[in-house]
Image (cartoon, rainbow, N blue to C red; front, side):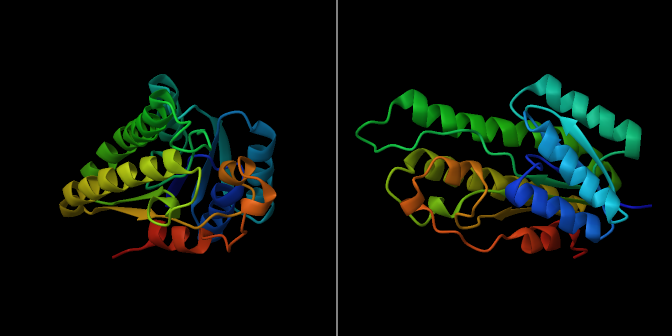
Length: 218
């Protein structure tokens, strides 16, 4: 039976690339999106044309009802999720600390943790009961490598990192791994869309590493 991978924010950038790589590894792929239905369907069409199986599902990762509906749809179609790639990024403001409001900082940190919490809660219990699961969270290298104006994103990434460590500690005895991948800034993402051209340095996309972690047996 092919394994099933859910990629949140899977319609473009790293998410889309990861969906294609996992499909190439034999996974059935769920391409989650919020407002990018056309791009999601293009990813699905590409996977299908290459001989794989994929479906696009719209869900806002910050809305509990959307997450529950998506999990139910996947369970009905393919029996559940074996590997979760939590990739969807919550919008944020690029600004200095001097101009940063608490709503901008606290809102970003809270939204990222809430989204990670919701999708993890929806997927992990079924994996624990089966004694196998892979969870990969995408964060940002800006939580460690600082850059002007990125305080909201970097702080939220650091908070997500601690969340993942505790989740990993609790799930490991049950055969479920949880890992964090923090790539450098890459093109075609929500991060680069909010930066001026001179502040963007396109790097290699990390989809192969993400897919490896999601597909590992050990």
